[in-house]
Length: 116
Length: 113
Image 1: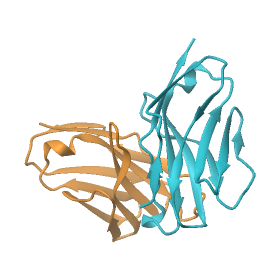
Image 2 (image 1 turned 120 degrees about the vertical axis):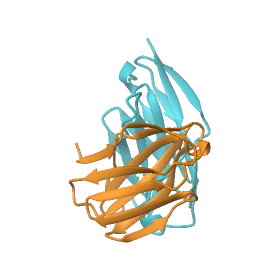
Image 3 (image 1 turned 90 degrees about the vertical axis):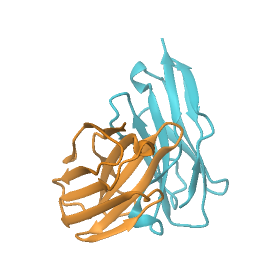
Image 4 (image 1 turned 45 degrees about the vertical axis):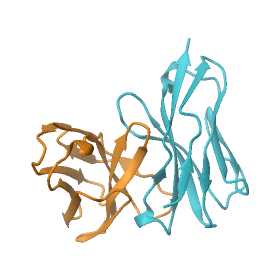
């Protein structure tokens, strides 16, 4: 399985500020997708954003955007105008057609705290 | 919300007993997965299925078995539960398109005492 690394176990941001969560991955493949999932205290896994490796344009979903650097194998998540409801565990995930049945391969997660 | 249900939601069991967790979907998705989530480890793949009676091992499959006799049901069995299998277990479903979203169940918290 491909290795996905989230080097920040915990991050903190003030409400209305911007925060960036880091993710790097290791692969020799050219065709893959990257995802960010959010897990609030309810434990539900919620898709935040996805990025296709072939697309150079960075994905954006409202306040969430990514910085995808394919050559550097980096996929960071930027949250703008942070809200209290953004407090959660965030997981970066990799998926390719070569891995186990299209299974998502997750990083260990970053716990995001949002302070008023 | 995607139709995926895990049962039970919580379970406490004794070491050495068999335990079966159930995942049920109403989406007719081809792929189904079992993950376990532990602090400091993220989610790790236990087993997955790519069709009825078609299953394969994931990263942490030792001590677990699975079965899929119908498209909608994917069962995870701990043959003889150990304390190291205390965890939160997630089922997920997906279509085979690489970019499609994987949908997750609510999770099952299993405690082995």
